[in-house]
Length: 309
Picture 1 (cartoon, rainbow, N blue to C red):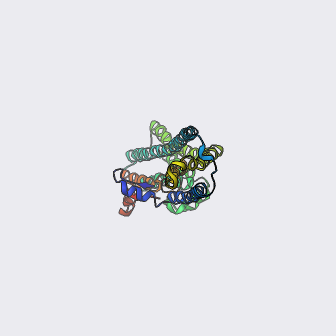
Picture 2: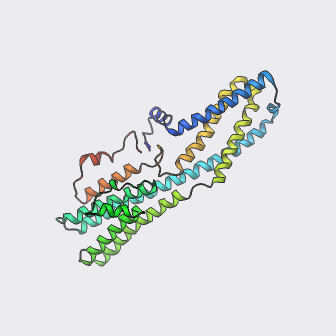
Picture 3: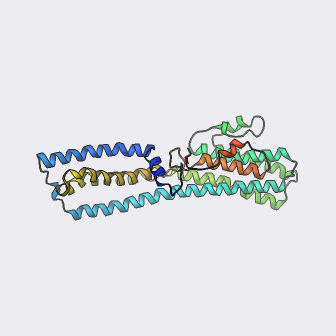
């Protein structure tokens, strides 16, 4: 994700136009430029196609309808993006609350359990991130005990595997008398939130915007751009080329941005910074449980004007 300062317009514009979305947009604009140039040359020099007599009211009506469709498309995509970010915000809060709970209950000299819970809670966001991206990577997970990495890699659903470790150790400590009944109930509620977060993220990822709706918008944009040069060529002549390109830049750009952010958990530049969020949880949890973490790990959680993938 591009994490940027809202007042720095020029750097933000630069980063946007160096990304894959901008390159995809440029490729489509080149096709539009070839089409509009051909139309202008044929219409002005060789043959009157008579489409320039199309009533301007028709184009205005199409423009209004297209604007409404793009507005709904953008809002729907951003709603998915924002729900994904809000869900990861719940995960951040839940992880901190779990760490605070375990820190308050466990004895200060119980280093073994403190290290276990610091690593296990920190493993969950990394396991969830890799699960959502369909890129299992056990090497990102801290080893809890001997053989645990091998066990984590065996279970297809990484977040469930990590949560299972937390539940099992919590139940063991409860039977040993570390927790009271009420503390055990509160911990169970927080542990349940972890899998609730995973389920919400999976729902967002596995329920894309319907294909027919996406296809209809693309066809509408195509028809609008195809008709547009004929309606303005009589007034603007060869200036029709830059004018149609500018309109296409806005319409096609909005559609591409909507496509990019409708799945907020991917690796594109405008997706959520899951690596940074996961690393921030790891730093917070270790600090709360008073487990030392290397300085380089803490630096990886900080954001500035940078591109986080």
